[in-house]
Length: 265
Image (cartoon, rainbow, N blue to C red; front, side):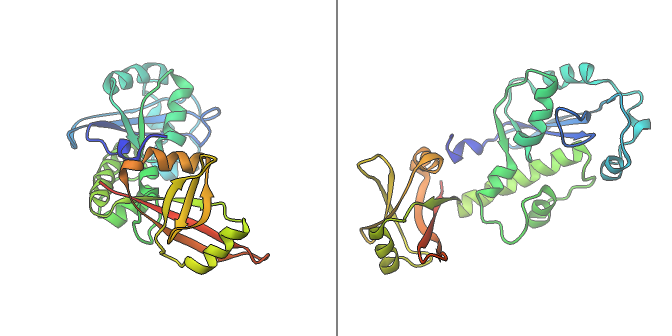
């Protein structure tokens, strides 16, 4: 897993699609837009409607404003994709939920392989208040105007604006990720009850098994392994603090422990 810093870039192409539905296997692209950003500044844009050669249902039209008459004379995907690929070149792609949505649709119609930064993933690593993490919620949180939501070019420009705000937030406040801690051993349970409170500072080191061992005031309180240990190790140079973020007791009387790892520049 790459470090969080790999998600902080200044040169990229923002990509957004509108489609006939949510399934890359069964639905079709009806609009492609892209915004080229160099040194954090918009330098060029690309936008085209796409003829899906099928009816666009009323639900999609209500969301996007795109109907059958608008795509009737638009290029089909075989003609739109080469122009989009030329615009993209070899630049990184940025988008909101781009990895799980837009990229999957693009890969259904092409052999595109590209490094992606997902602003949803970036936002999920930051404390942005009580707002949700949808593009609309983040626009509202950061005061970014989206003049024509759910049209691809407007969403691209809004995503760029949100990303710039997220980068500023990271510089000022850092980022974080959470780790579930394996702590069922009797010694861990005793140490948790004695030493851990919400916000307690923790330290981390590897134990004899190579697992990440968390300690509170020098006493072991649990281990972390698997993908979260890998994320911890990949971000080792960015880690600023580790604190208790979850402390509850289950129905069997066992303490459950979660840790928050704070990252910063």
